[in-house]
Length: 231
Image (cartoon, rainbow, N blue to C red; front, top):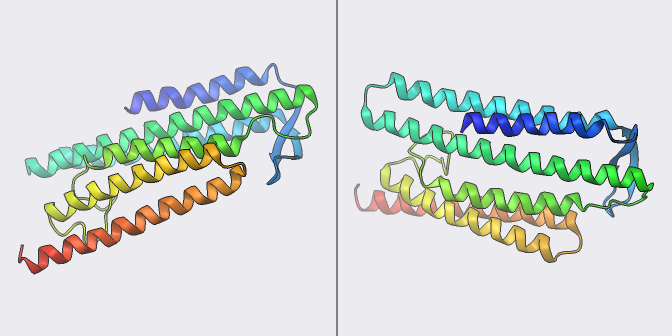
């Protein structure tokens, strides 16, 4: 996973460097809420996002290494397997994020190029809509791997109630996975049919907050049931 994540991250950097050779010196760099271009800047500002992608990949790599080392150090086989499982899930999350941002960078470059060439006053690519749809896909992918995590304090539904025992962790993260997948689907639907893309992003944030709150409440309910039954 780490190698693929880094390959994708460098594709964003190298691809941007190549595309910039064919772009005008000044390109649109910012848009208002209505999609009007409100700032032009140097084409080389487009290199900032690929660098951020690389830095994020470094963060994910260090995160993965933490669990890999934990898996090697612990003597308990169950705990070691849990650490390896968490490292794998984190690797998938990092890979998905790198892919999402690389695709986003592609749309950003295409929009900047077409707008600069045509002298446009408005965006030709609805970046907010693209971002929203990619966020929805990311939520769905993350939801599909959440259930593979083991009890830990960094990944998954990780409140004290969910970490009470294996049952609370398994049930809480299964519910959390369903909630975040639902949030992802709703985000894609909202972005597809809503005209105001920035409002769609705000609604997407609301979906994920709602999914998080519901997951925490459910974790508490499972915890209370476990306590009541004396487990």
